[in-house]
Length: 510
Image (cartoon, rainbow, N blue to C red):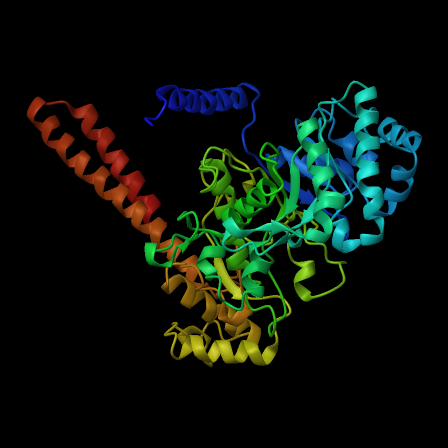
């Protein structure tokens, strides 16, 4: 039987109408940031609000609904996804009146001056607090009903889930939900989300997928780096090519939902990121270079709006984990080093997100240096210093005895100079400021006294070359005008040209 021509027309009509409606509702993917509070020197609410505005961050996620922060953000144009901590699930799931009181206290006084974009109930409850799972859906429904009663049904209510609820996720086409959770919890949850136009919130970490794969997952694939076609991950069942791990994780979620006959619930990535520091023995890939690469490429990935291989028309919004290093968090070393910034607002590393419209403005300069990482082991630094000055062919002449950068005669100081020499020699290539995790990228010039680091020398050389070029151009232009002046007997332009040449040459010589 021949194909029905109206089938293809209707399919196209469905696709374009869906895209048109999404655009009409302003549903464009965004990049937001999570803000945790286990920070020893967290900025006060007013300063925090000013910092968020200065970084041109438009979407944040809080793990609670701190009234002080919500008040400080009034009128700032920042949408806030507020959280309900796990320890409040019992009260909210047991009493609709408690849920109504929570909305009255944490939402109504602030919205819409501080737009509340979503309510995230609990955090990774199936693994973090499985005993509260029976109450989770009750709490979600009670809070949603309370919002509806307050004429705020447009605020979606969902719960951030760990990626571990999805089993056998690679390749994505074979993914399915944990069967012990599927019927009792996930199916009713997805039904509720579909009925209320709320997203499935997932915490997705390619970093952990890479680490747990024992290098079966290519590092470049986890970092959004371009891969040659021969190294692209191909799903054998769909023949779709996956150039990054995050796409595969998102599509695995869509396949798992489809296996439960759910196809209309979008994915919202409530957490993703890469740690900038970790144990030198067990977390070698937790470095500033890799964190910068992942988060910079993540931002470009969302802003490019290319979608996923399974759903090219749909790019998920993401919240980067996290804005500040939570230095008081227990656990592995990396737990305290996921922030884009330190608690005092100084950058943890440099992002490269040109074209992001000013979003995360700490990338305003490309002038970076490579220095010894804070807290790096002395013996590891010495080994890295020996390699840099030996096989790495860094120029270490300035840190020899009697030379200008020999003092202070400390391994850390000498290593920083050698690291920067190698980093600049390699043109700041990705991975050139790693040294087995004992080096870090900084935007602060490490030069001191008469000791000028290679990065500063290169910048000064570049400036001198630019000035020399300007002087040469001015001299050539002036010479041309001089001949014209002689030809026309015009003396005034001649005098002006002589003054211009003298001025440029004086600036160049100074």
